[in-house]
Structure formats: C-alpha cells, structure tokens
Image 1 (cartoon, helix red, strand yellow):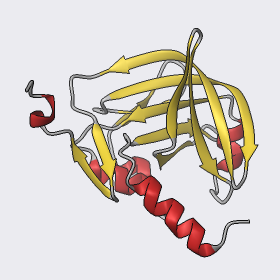
Image 2: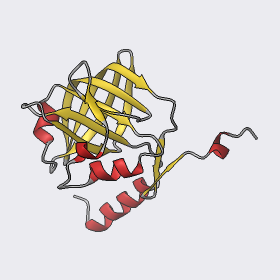
Image 3: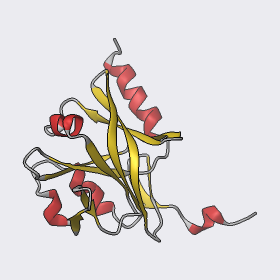
Image 4: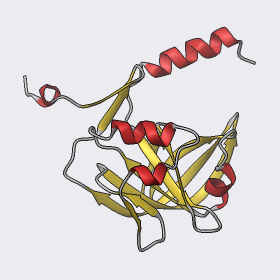
Length: 166
C-alpha cells in the first residue's frame, strides 16, 4: 500500500505530464444527461477504433457510466476552461451552463468542443479505486478549434509558437 507521501509524489509527477482535457457525457436510465471532467483518456486501438477513460469509484454517477452502454468523450478546446471547471464542480447544474443537444445516438453532445467521440462501451475493468471504461468509437466530430492542454494544474491552448518550424 502506498503511503500518503508516495501518493503526493505520484500526483506531483503525473501533474507534470501534459495532457488534453475531456468531458465525458452519458445519460441516466431515466434519460437525464450526466457529465464530468476527465483527463484520464487515451487511445487504445486503431482497428477497431477504441479509446479508454477512467472514473473514480466515489463519483455519484459511477453506476450510470459503467452500466449505460455508451458515452461521449468531448476533447475540450483551449477556450473552454470555464466549462472544464464547471463539469469538475459538485452541486452545479452542469448542463445549464453550456449549449448542448442530444445526438442521433441519444447522447448529450456539448457544442464547440475541439472534438467528440461517441462510443459504445466495450468493457469495464476495475482497477484500484477507479473503473476503466473502454469504448468502441462509433461517431467522430471534429471542429476547427485548438485543443486544451492541462499541465501543472493549469489549462491553456497550445501556443502558436509551439508549431513554428525551427
């Protein structure tokens, strides 16, 4: 078992690993939209197209995400920092704070993100205090925006200078 000191070091090390930021959405059994900010997202396979993300066992919507059968991963744009914070907050009506609509698949889709991947759940794997959800990508939407970057607890767009040829 890791000591608190080890957990703090683990968080510090991974906090220095730059990542993109996503919001994952789905619906409850009653059809109510649910969503949360997630940065534990990765590609799994190109054939078939598969991705994964993980959800903490303490999240109130865990059952809905694990048993819902499908979810949408929104890769956030650099200008969506406030939306990122909203979907990471508790006790907030998250969907009232953004423009969204149900897709043809019946998933809540947030407007103006960098991209959206609509997925069918392939497998859920318990791992420590999280469950990893692996999804088959069924629909991809990409907008002409810059993606968000998360590093050292800060959010930003990738600066244009990063792309400059030297």
